Image (cartoon, rainbow, N blue to C red; front, top):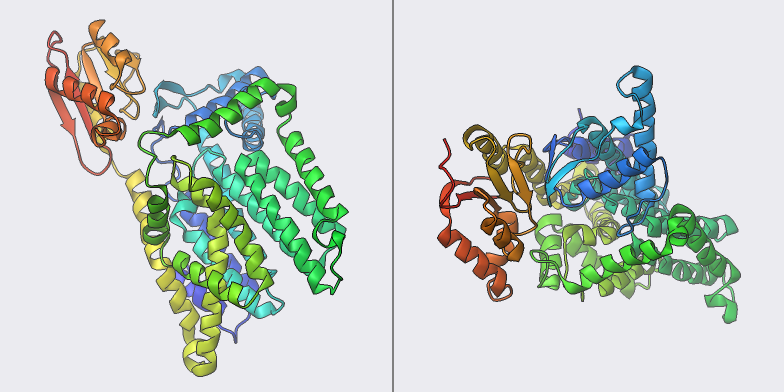
Length: 537
């Protein structure tokens, strides 16, 4: 089996132009990175969004209708998962595993990030579909690069370097294993970029149509994905200039550009039909999600610029720094392809940087653009080395650069995957609770706590213990309380920002009776009991 180094070395040598072997090797790496450990956590789920999306899909399957009744995220990925769920249901009924679609059940959720999956196979299949889309995105990165330069061999090498960086990107990999819309949005954003590059190179009405369709699908996957439509006017101008057309009113905006915009709206509405058919729910969901990003989210807010800069530098690695140099170099050369690659990331960053909420998946849409920019400059540097020392370059100088660029992201990707597969404090705590707490105990858990079997215990779930709701349950007579640092840490580590919640946690930790702490690699878990409750066995 080819290693990452061998894969890159075999396909970047100028004297061995074998595009099929090269991209096949990179795609093999991409698929492997995305399916490795894809069954993490099952049959339990600790992700805040996966259960929401999964339950929306299964509810549609059980009802037999297409209204998600949920519009915080667009509907296109949900419909794709629904098609898969229907296929599994039909095959299951043929095989005798199910009597009807109602035999596939939603996730049993006890609190945020605390759930158990009755049908892990269906859930895993949906994760697999996301992984397929994430891997296809790597292929699109390669295709975009092939349209950046008229030099066939050079564009091939740029594409392989960019695709390799996308294949091992920690952020792209980790978000290509979840039942979420993020990987879908990136895929269609890249599809729109590919079509825009076709417009810049060749014009042609069909390419404008392709842009309009792809932009609509991008917005139907992630609302902000529709911003990629701003690349089309730039691509249109590049084509006009390249064709030597005179400056006039139609130079900047043409019927084809306007038509593509209209088509993108039509495609969006076709993919999210209940934006019209259930407009009130659609507006509540979409605007509610926008307001959420504007209001803030404990644990995922503050120092937005520093957070994203750290993510790029210390997670995604030096390729993103090279991308910054590539932007300066390309703009100084007045490179049309560089302008096309830069316009969306700049506008998108201008949108997300002022927002208080920040997380890795929000930065995903611009990462392939950065990889394309970095790859272009890396290949230019390697070409310069080839002219200076042909033997050195022919024996893998470019492959060596790629390995250096990918070393940090590969390590981060492996570390994250191994951490998901390792036994975590929540796993140990879940088993300990099952073995040691008296059956029938009344247990209060907060978000991201270990799953507590409601068939053995009376379980109450709250989002956070740092509020009045938890106090009411304690006054009502619960026996045990389970705390997760993934939730309480957001408040106790920032008492200046959350004085009320931090104070509530401090009082609880002082007045309750400690039972057991679970630490190690992962999220620490703490278990307390009220003074009236019997000690565990």
